[in-house]
Amino acid sequence: LIFQQFEDNLTLESLVHVLETLRKISGHALNSRVRALFSQQPGSNFLSLQLLAALIRTDLLDWRNIDMAMSKAIEARKDGSLEFLEHMLDLALLNNRPIALYADFVRTLETAWAWISEDPNSAAGQRLKTKLMGSGLTQPSRGPIDADSQGTAFRQDQMEYVFEEWVHLWNNQNALDKSTTVFIQQLQAKQVIGDKNDFFVFVRTAIDLSVDRFEHILHAGAIGDAYVMVDALAKLISMFISMNEDASTSRASFLDSVLVLITLVLNHHHVKRGEQLNQRVFFRLLSMLLHEVHNESENLSEQEQRNMMLKFAARFSDLGPLRLPGFTFGWLSLIQHRVFLPVILQMPDNVGWGLYANLVVQLLDSLSEQLKAFNILTVSKEVYRATLKLLVVLQHDFPDFVAGNHVRLCASIPPHCTQLLNAVLSANPQQGYTKLPDGKEEIKTYPGLIEEAKSMLQEGGLLDLVDQTLQVGPSEDVVAQIAHAMTQSEPQETAYGHIGVAANPYVIGSVVIYVGNQAAERLSQTSSSISVTGNEPEVSTLSLLIHELAPEARYYLIASMVNQLRFPNSLTEFFSQ
Image 1 (cartoon, rainbow, N blue to C red):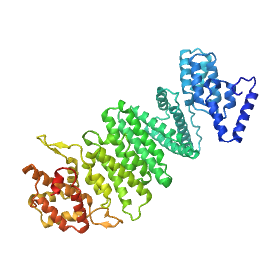
Image 2: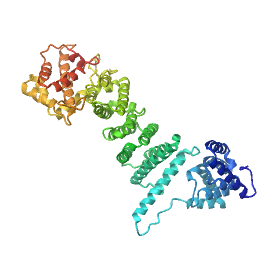
Image 3: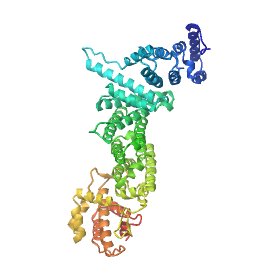
Image 4: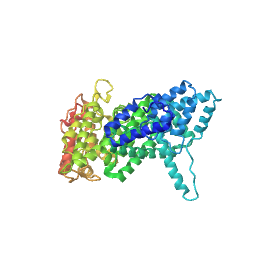
């Protein structure tokens, strides 16, 4: 009956009133049935001003369906369609209490604008054009009192409204690709987002709005629509980055600024909300940004794409569990994201290894403190399982990375966590990092591992002492100085039960790697295979250190030497003898 033609509005309004009353007093089943029946109706059935006026305050109108039907009518140049559109917009949009957004009529407005441009003599078209041109965002009416606060409040409301329009536009399947581009261009032309500062304020407002909307929808039980806003925000950020025309700022730098802003907002939520932090929205935002950058790879040079991923890796370090423990699980999912992990570890010249090693070390440092407790919390066990799975994936898919950074990784793992240690030490590089000049034998010791050990010894003032010892033989004074450095750590190293230990795993590991590599290189020059007699200065140095060190540091030293018994390489051959 509702979709039939009536001579007066009273009958139609009465039927709608009866229907709404029945929906209020009935259960969920009838409501769902009514909405399903209305959603199945073709959009052309709603192209009646009487029907729209009667249903305008209900939730039974699907504006996207109506938009598609109306755009087809205008595209066919039906008589009276522009007049009907004018009245429909007055009813739903161009009034003091609009119940729809411009994005709900995106196809209709595009088609109508094309008609108006083709036929400038149409009176209805010119009236509609005048109304649309004059219906932009209003300006704040500032009074003499609290002008700044009024302007700030207006700006906040304006940006929230614009973001709502963007969400509807991005989520409107009827919208064309060019519609989103035009929308962003209009934001800049109308000075809604005039510069980077405006853009960052807009992103901050959009993040807070996305969190509030997510929690509201989640509370209502409709989880499927909870991520619509944050997904739209990720797309908006991606488009602004790709459309960046500022010659002084690269796309990677622009992305880095956005990531810094997200980090600050996340930190603010972490401090203010504590255990009530909404991890899922921030994880979704960063995850979708990763996808957007990956999808834009065709429009980016290899160098730009590489720089963007390196920016992600650098900023993920600021979101880790040592700084934001409430974001641990979201962060764990990000650092093993399928469009992040393989890309960062497969870059030319291994430029991403250092940044990703920092992420894994931070994870292990955070986890190790939890595993040293006598009673391990349930959440710590979950983090342990997730960490072990990550290490197994790295050991299986990227063994070269794990083997090349095993000293740092093992130094961050407590000695009693043998499962984690084995996951690291069992990594067998698939191919050598370099080749000897004759091209016959591969060197499977990662050069960066030796450089890192030298850098660590240089910072501690030990490099010259170790070199002197290896050249002229060990002396008691030099060995005592090296042993002293091995027992000093800041902050103090702790073991199981958080008991203080006089040992520095990083210095000990660096000494073992450097001494072992020097011995392997020297012995391999004299013969094709390494043969240890026991008279070598390297062996004497390690032997004196074992006797000089206290039991705690001695354990770490011997454990570090045993950890070198891994895949076939020069270090394994030396320490096995």
